Amino acid sequence: MKAANVIIHRPLAITFLLITAAVLADAETILIDWGDGSGTGGVSAPSFPAGDGKYWNSLGNNTANPTNAALIDSTNGSTPVTVTVSTGSGSVSGWGDFNGAAAPDPYDEFSVRDDALFNGDTGAIPITFSGLLANTEYDFTMISRRPASGRDGKVTITTGTSTDIGSGLVLVLNGDVLSFSATSDATGKISLGFAENTAGGGGAVMNGMTITGDFTASTPAAPQLSGFTYDPVTGNSEVSLKAAANTDYKLVEASDLDFATPDQDPVTLLGASIGTVNENTITTDGSGNATVQFNLGTANSATFIRAETP
View 1: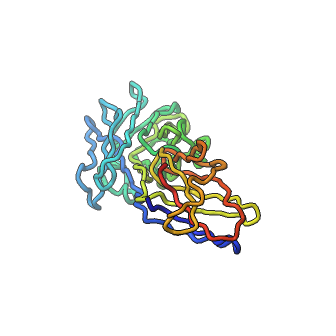
View 2: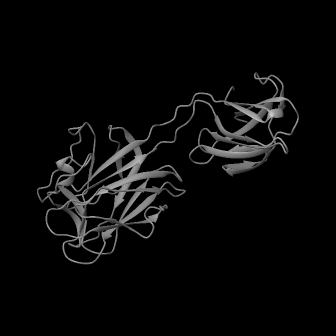
View 3: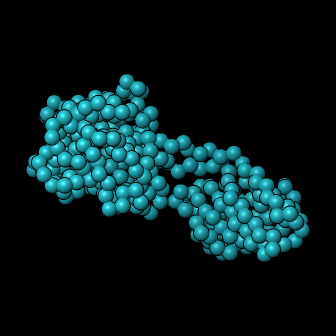
């Protein structure tokens, strides 16, 4: 199996990477219209392309919260991502029609800003996304629009991590679009909280939100090696691997590009900072990544390396 090859000219410590073509997923965007205003005169975002050709997910109404709702992306492509929202009971939180003011793209669709998720309390409503890639960063935006008096919102995170959110971000009523990044946990979840920033009348509203990132693990056409480093004094080396998720690979070293007579099969591995080493096999993580350390020695000869399945 011919895969990504690294050519090393050790006397001058020069490296040349020959990378096989890879099929990498472009970032996708999920658009969410919170609250279709059922029972209050609100408008659901269209299930067909809106004026600018984007598809929306309209979720939540006066009688039901979205529970494990499968989400489509902005091109109407399916994703493995689901969302669960719990607004509790009574009038403190829920869904409503707010006829929000104008907003920038993609929130310029009236059907999006017309209705919203609202919370009249400083206790957070949990919004949990599942089915994301493990330990992967995603970009979020949110908007708050309401013509009547109300409160700024507060966004927190309880599952996953976000240096942007920290102890909480303020979603300003009728203010700018709020943008931040968050990283999923090892199970592919991010849980956000939405509440009033300060207690008082009117409550906080969130009309819509977007999530952008890779929702499906990208698998190269062949194992892809990159980021090679080599110390000519010690022979210590490191390389990163992008391949199928949770899959075993080995490194093979040869003095000829055809790998007719490998010098090391497999290469002796010293450890891994990403992925898991078991003897001389490296197992990629849930996103198909691995970074492995090994020693190529200091002999003055050219070496070729590639990754293969054992």
